[in-house]
Image (cartoon, rainbow, N blue to C red):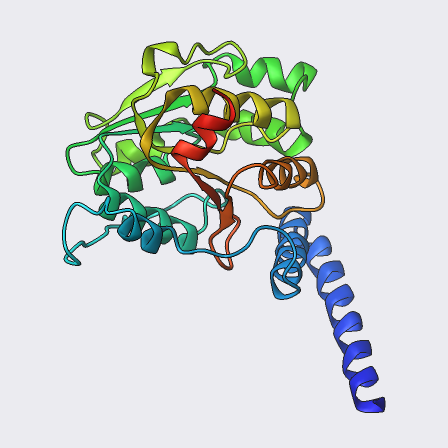
Length: 271
């Protein structure tokens, strides 16, 4: 027991010192470190959404378009920091390659890291991505209305689709510009086989984007949310998704901040 207590004390001191060192160097890195620690703790304790491999689920449903020969692709050069992590990109690339969705719809383009993975793995499927209008940085910086503080910073710093242009993929997807609160999903109803929600993280936006994605979803396919598991700025996002999980099957991709659900389940919830 004394050894266990010593280990606990050392762990607490080490974690606190690490956070302080990171804050002295870069407060954003410190927040990211602390957030990942909290998320990992929740996973190890069995809290929150259960783990399930979405690729296995696709095969179980008979949706895979080939028989085990799929190859996923990730860009060799990813020059932007932040956003979807490499392990999360790998998971989304595998899902896209196996599912081969006829239409992908992403809410939150930012630089286009995740969009590029969808484009490179969707085969002949259409990839549509949506971000705020070009005048949004001024609006957000002056008012911050409807956004958490980190979203305001990202909006002001974004270069929408810059990764896609660097990779020469600018003609292989469709870019929409709209505030998702005003976006009308009806023209895309029942057609999206892979949805990805990674726009503004305030609860109003997450609920809105989830409901509108449900309108667009087909019965075949999956929908993903990014940044699940946070207990700081993303607490309301996490609590909202865990609330949905009491009504439909929902899962997380292990050791990531990706949550997902079968498209048909989410569609039916809001029908």
